Length: 153
Image (spheres, rainbow, N blue to C red):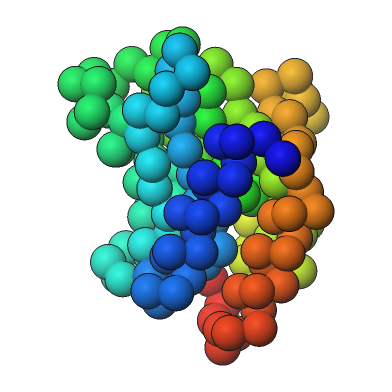
């Protein structure tokens, strides 16, 4: 398993066990060093924008003292929703690696696919998005489902 995805999974588990939100953990890497981490905190902060990627982007921007994350790569347990994908592009993140697909996200109660379809999908971004370690991330989603009441996100 990719070492950064392993850390993203641990970040997601921390959020799940704290009741912070969905099973989405994220790390941002620059020059083989983690510069930002985050997990879904939508429930904790009562804020629909506190997805794992958004939290990691905020953390990396603070740590690097810049909004420009050029040279960074992002690792996330679930394929980014349209909001997070747009934030990655705005932040100049060079590559996104994800575990579970947007359809996997939908299968555990998240509406990412609905919004993705409204926005026209992501066919033009296929070289920007790379799937890795899906099986390990699916285990994370199963863990989330086993301990969490269904919430419509």
